[in-house]
Length: 82
Picture 1 (tube, one colour):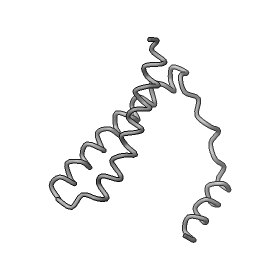
Picture 2 (tube, one colour):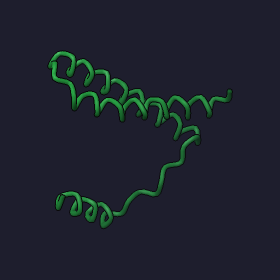
Picture 3 (cartoon, rainbow, N blue to C red):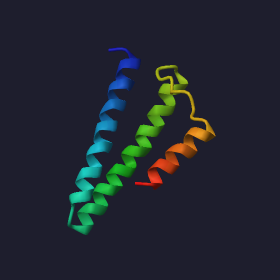
Picture 4 (cartoon, helix red, strand yellow):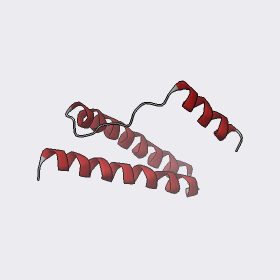
């Protein structure tokens, strides 16, 4: 397996884990367990961002074009009307 594939697979796995943490945390009644799961999520977010930066640096990942200030303002407005 090539490095690019390994990085991509690992990123996909971490991203899946991050999505799962939200559901688990939202349903966790035990405060100590909830805090531990939040800590695990935080560590995975750090790992994900580190790997994302590596993938971007090596050209394995090309991010979408950055949003304009107008696009950002529009999304903020739409989200605040919820």
